[in-house]
Image (cartoon, rainbow, N blue to C red):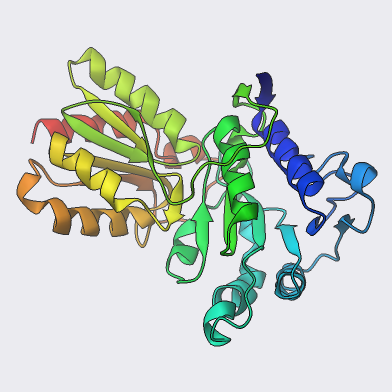
Length: 325
């Protein structure tokens, strides 16, 4: 298998998808000859031409509306929003048009071939306009799928599955890992099932759940806990909407404890939805309160980024609290 970083894996996935299906097109701000601000679309315009990989004006609402129109006519647009922080001008198009297109037409029309790719999260000293994690906003919207990979192998397989999906997908890419995360990735086409969590490590004392770049962080915390004799089961949720409640519940019924970690602020974060569901499903199995380790309820700070982030030390302390309750 080839060694790739996450950007290379995403680029490879787009290349394979465009080669496989002429209806797949890529567009967004600077995605053409420049290859995107992070170079995720490098060389695609040269290979497939300006009709299939092209720049758009600087208007996120326009990008989303254009994507809806193309998908409604049978194309499979992969639209890049340059940073997830910039997705909010497109919120109306995504939430009121993309998500509801099939429903409001009585299944006569759909935009199932549509994928919005967007880099999200902190870790690059980007400050409050280039570090946000807005996945929970979209998880409240029936009709969408929300997917977040943790490494290059996952990124390629999940992106190809998103492009092939019959439902519109928002694909959040952890920009912190773009060049930092490397691994072996098959060069051929493959898909990873959407909506299915992965148990990345078996354990018996506590379930630790995260997604995206936070998986690397919780792994550090788990290694610290294991030195204390605590056996951790680790789950990568991978899909926020729909999310795999069954896999999480099976794990929590085994361990009796749950620690959830995400980058986004605590209040209204998706950890709250997970905690409520697991409390209802696994109430009689729980040995301690469900722990949430999240970002703070403040704008994402530039100078205090290290203090703000839901890091391995905070996660380690939560694991200990859960086990020692």
